[in-house]
Length: 101
Image 1 (spheres, rainbow, N blue to C red):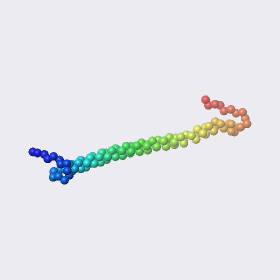
Image 2 (tube, one colour):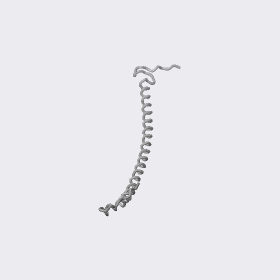
Image 3 (cartoon, rainbow, N blue to C red):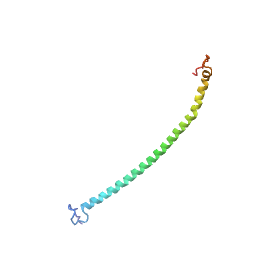
């Protein structure tokens, strides 16, 4: 059984020419690249979805923190006003406010 050598010229009479073989290899490479690009895109989409969910949770936690601050600050300000009320009510008197610490 003898094998034919691939010809160097595109117009020769061999069963599969060198150029057809190269074209088939290029098509295979294109299919492989397309498949790998699809897999990479799938992983990137999953990562983006997870990052979005994590960002959503972080934003929710930040809003909860701001809500707690908004509920806590007014009583603190009122406590400070109550502590300094004698100075406002009796400005001419010699009322001293005891230091806290």
